[in-house]
Image 1 (cartoon, rainbow, N blue to C red):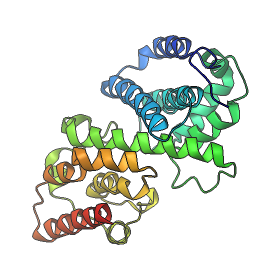
Image 2 (cartoon, rainbow, N blue to C red; image 1 turned 45 degrees about the horizontal axis):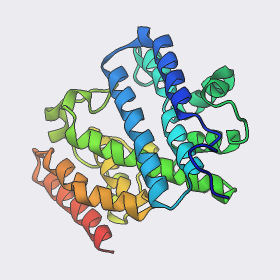
Image 3 (cartoon, helix red, strand yellow; image 1 turned 30 degrees about the horizontal axis):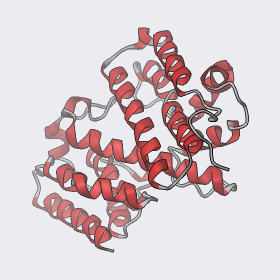
Length: 264
């Protein structure tokens, strides 16, 4: 069934007003990562709507995609507060987002409850290694679209933002990245054109090249086209000036692996 703008059960204007209310309630936690997360959230929401349209989804489905993008990172604002005093405190911002939504915020974002299952699973799985745990195919579609949008903007962020805001909590400087290297498990994943498991990251450069490997988990041709047109992998490669020849060779191999995936 197709839905027009008038028949969509999702009021995006109300959702954005509620997002402003949510931000106002967390403004006391404002730090360099606060504004960065707001701009990231808005870009992901817009990208979700665009990718939904590219996939031929109807208006209500595009509205749903945009709403999911708006909601996906609300747990990050609590993470900023928690991690101010300790970067290594374990924290799952997707699980925190569900706690926030279940604490009354979801009904403020959308009155209807018929989309709750899709919203909750898409948000929960957006930072997981894969969406294989989602059984319902329609829900998995929205989860994959969200992950594509999130990865596109994370690539943009790392390619364009100043070094001191590239990693909101650990804040490694450029020298630390240049002096680092890629560990064996991370290198193996990227050479085999796989995403990096977060627990395999050991060095500062591991965290950086993990983002470069995002291409290997893009699900739509539209997302791959955007990444290729923007040259995100090349731009990320160009931001690192390795101190060690061995690290320079690692970076060269990673770039070639990603470019060969483009060709494929």
